Amino acid sequence: MEFESNSWIRDGGCYYPHLFGGIMLTAAILGLSTSYFGRIYVPTLPYLLPDLSVFHKKKRAKRRVRVYMDGCFDMMHYGHANALRQAKALGDELIVGVVSDEEIIVNKGPPVLPMEERLTLVSGLKWVDEVIANAPYEITEEFMHRLFNEHKIDYIIHGDDPCLLPDGSDAYALAKKAGRYKQIKRTEGVSSTDIVGRVLSSMKNMKSQQDCFGSSQSGEVDNVENLNPVKDCAKGGQISHFLPTSRRIVQFSNGKGPGPNERVVYIDGAFDLFHAGHVEILRSARQLGDFLLVGIYDDNTVGGVRGTQYPLMNLHERSLSVLASRYVDEVIIGAPWEITKDMITTFNISLVVHGTVSESNSLSKDTCDPYAVPKSMGIFRIIQSPKDITTTSVGQRIIANHEIYVKRNAKKEASEKKYYAEKKYVSGD
Image 1 (cartoon, rainbow, N blue to C red):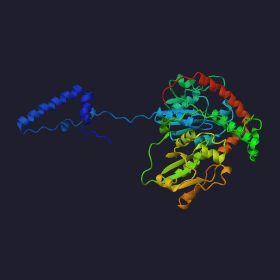
Image 2: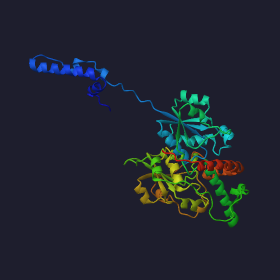
Image 3: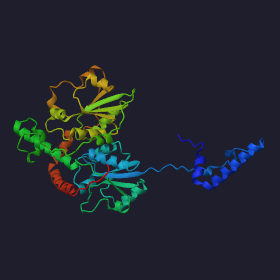
Image 4: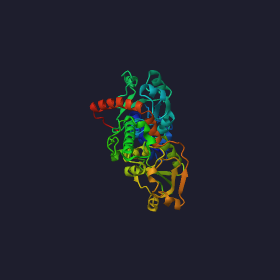
């Protein structure tokens, strides 16, 4: 609420000093005259000059700055989320363009995730205000004018890593030339190329274990027969280069807990290789209460339940992906496998939910029911999973086209090495 009872006096003195000084001097003289002549009535200053609106500063509503960022957002990860978080910080409203499947095929090769799933992932992020589907890979003059005129975009945003077209030209050259381009800092340690590499590596490791131990799951990885699996049977896979910091977690967090009377809903899982199925089940869970608490299993728990090739993303990476969701209020980093009575009391949990679609946990058939306590308390519910997508099913898409992705990754890894070789410090983020 704004109070303006005497603000006209202050504003008048600031913006019209000579005129205001003369008025005040006249008022003072009249005031003295009144005290001297006793019965002579002199109106007070506001009535003497009824129209002093000239002194009021005209307050105009501040125009909201609209920024635009686009991308393929294939194999959506916390690096994408952090880029969009930084972009949002450069304006008031963030509009995100999701590049079409056709444009990705021409410029990068076939995407792992179709447009529908990529739209679900992007629109599910807490920093995104609007989404433009089927955006072009290159910022053409026609599309740039459309952004400026139809969508009222003020600035076009991209990371400090180069985005080159097949002919080697800069995809954002026109935006830079127009003076409407701003740059953000790239999130180190992860990329879609890196994640595809992790999937391929994990499948090689699974194949190697089957060769060593005679696993009965060979049907799941027959397509990686020619991927030159590792020779030993130790846990393999690509190592994450992500360096977690407390500041990053704070940047992704909402920073507030539930109110005393709010209904807290709890859902847990690995949330590995965060996908559209995760987004939709989190949305469904959030609708059942006022505050959504998400438990994320640690790496040892996931590996013990699903096999040593999992998880593909480590605990901190998975936590950031979940925290970036607009439907999530808080996470437990390294949640216990079994939900205890003490945990329910500590977090004031009103309802525990689990989806109908999940990974097949073949290694956990003999373990106890992790939901036994909430079931006995009558606060457990199975909810319908809106999408039939799992981490394994996404990985199988990559395996089915592994030759294409291996070739694409080799090319991308070359450009990644060049980026890191020429990398310079970029402030911000």
